[in-house]
Image (cartoon, one colour):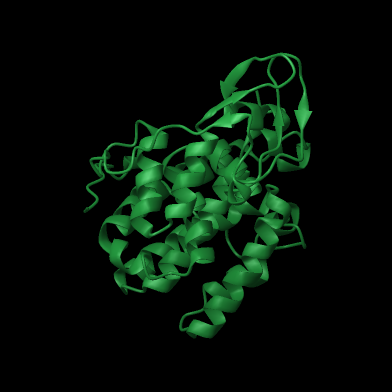
Length: 281
């Protein structure tokens, strides 16, 4: 199957700005381990080696998605990462594009209300709007990357595919679902009943046969047109399958299955009771 996403590049892409590297804002908008400025400076060097790029990106990622929390430094970093993504697209650098999309997608999946109760995440209105515009442009850039590089993406190892797929889900689909799947590792089930509030934390994982309380959803593999993103379960299941992640696609059917509470008998979408556990409702 080929992908034919129909996502136009937003008009606002030409108005995106980057914060000057000598700005005091880099000290105000911190990551998990402090300022992200040194790694951004390394990324923006005129002729960095592939090794230097990989090292800077690894450090930046550690600073921006530590413990799947959201950090204010992301507001300043994403415009630079998007700019670098455009450069690497021109250079047809698959690995750097993949790395950048993974990092920005992981930022996106942490950028949810659950992670914004801490006032430290708040940003100046103009800075936040610029960041939001970047994320809109990233959606179009990611769709293009997928359409152009599906066969090469299939060659990634399972760990690389797993992290990339949840990043893509956050960019193209639903950030909260991506956050939950990343936390659950496409295997675990931490649930809280919508009715009686029963919490279950020791349910068997997907790889151990799955919980008796959940009836998996029917498979939708082969039904996707490779274009529509309206039905998340449909397109993401097939996307995982196309990447060669059959186990992850099967695990998704459990999260979109029906959970029956053993205490009160209330039925819910399994993903709903996982959300309940994280108090996301």
